[in-house]
Length: 337
Image (cartoon, rainbow, N blue to C red):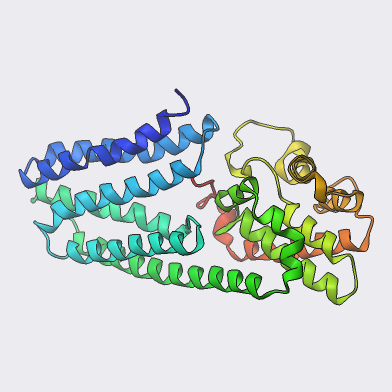
């Protein structure tokens, strides 16, 4: 049953939509608010349970996104009848939802942005204030201020999605326009269902494991070819250097310091690479994957290619350091559920 409970909680947010609309149109606002708050809490609970029970999935990620939108839209429909400014929020949210669908249709990526998470919570908070204003009109609540903040965040979210989409599109085009040699080297990896799962593994800030390793692989391939190194091994090791099994953010068990993700995931990636792509592995590639986290690794890179992979991985990860909020604890990365 653990496998189904998180998704059932998510689906409950969709099933309750007709009841919410009915209660709103019949002006049973207090009952509506109580149900809506209870249902909104399932958004926190389903993800927590999925991570705790290790039942996260791409289906869960899609259902969660759909459920959030359906719940928000149902509440906004009710509020529009009381406050015409909510129609702006509704239209912008419709545009964002349409963009997400188009994004997935074109690139097959479920994009999760930090500003999108913030925007979602602000929308629900603004909706809550809207209903409190209706139920308790005597309370002086600055609803318009939060409406303005919500609209600004929605516009920024649309801009950020457009920028992110353009970046992914350029990367896809770059890959397509590269010499066919690169694709011939890595096509078995890129077309693997197991490797495709890494599109939904958050790695660094606003970047999936898939995006990160593809960027490292392409950089290593081009540099290796230019300086007459073993660019084939660089392309393969670049794609598989972070081929660990589960997102590091969802690991809840306490581990010893030297058994944490940064110290052990290189070995795990090498083991998985040998398991799923044995025909592509050789001693040099295995060593490159195993040592790419130097100096956190006990083993030192033993070839020019291994040193190049180590340095390129560090360089391509520097974007993480450009977001100081991640070090404050106010923002935490997590796998999309």
